[in-house]
Length: 99
Ligand SMILES: [Zn+2]
Image 1 (cartoon, rainbow, N blue to C red):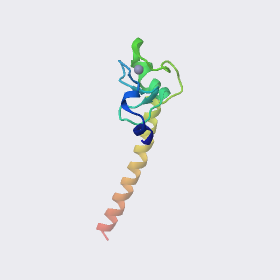
Image 2: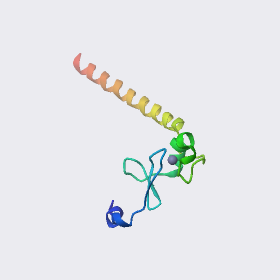
Image 3: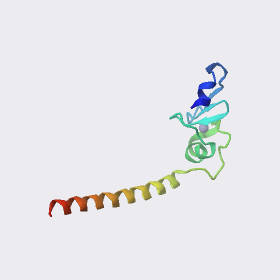
Image 4: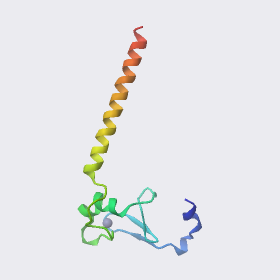
């Protein structure tokens, strides 16, 4: 955050991809949320599929970044462990109730 504060708005070069709305500030990619981005992930998630010919991501067309397939895998793992924890909690709760 501090590096953002020391850069004045006047000297920042802001570029936005017309198709995927990705944002580059002084050549650094940022996600829409404002956190620091990753051009390769952006390419895998958005630009390679939806960027089209107007996309300004320099890494568009490159493989190796994050993809929805990978994200879905992460989500399934996360969901499974959450579900297990929930069932565990419920079991504990039920045991408490029926003691
Ligand atoms: Zn793009």
